[in-house]
Length: 287
Image 1: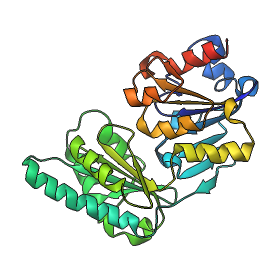
Image 2: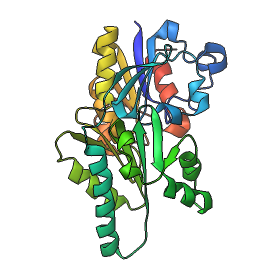
Image 3: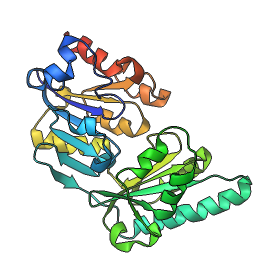
């Protein structure tokens, strides 16, 4: 039996996480011997196409990608969008302005300084505010977040006023230094008709149109390719992967996932740092 493999791209199915056995050697086998074991390999990610690492873009064997939490379904081989859904008209401006006001009120009550950083995915490009770029160029920030924000982003003045960009917005992603503020904003916007919110890393809030998520993107591909649910394997490790699990016959959460995510999966694999995805596939396929 052949399967469609759909996986959280950046954390699980990467060159670093594919098991270093003969059967999963990316240099010899291309990706994971897709012709033999998988009818298609579909990568699922909250990022936009320009933000995917080059080593991922260069992997062979990939057929499709669900990007921006399902707002875009991408044909990897034909390099074109099969499906795209934008946020409701006017909502992108409303979200950014509401976040700015909630941030101001929260700052006054908290009595301590924190920041937030917004990026808007619009018409296949990723935009951010030029003031954030100035900050990232000079601030000392742990990890690679500054490098991420300074790479493949188009910076504009007063992002929330860029109506031509915002009217084509597919997704808004906002990183908060204050995790509590992120949670408050997500809880508020979960009640707003026409908007779907989720999170993929601690402190971020992600906004797409209502009904748009990784599961919806997978469902579109499932129908297009006429692949039955029982022949789909989904692997993920965060809240925004749960909807994807529901569309798959076999769902796998990584050990590093939060308990509510693991509870929604059929199986739990070893964590991202210990080749969990590849180890599961080897056992499941009896390689």
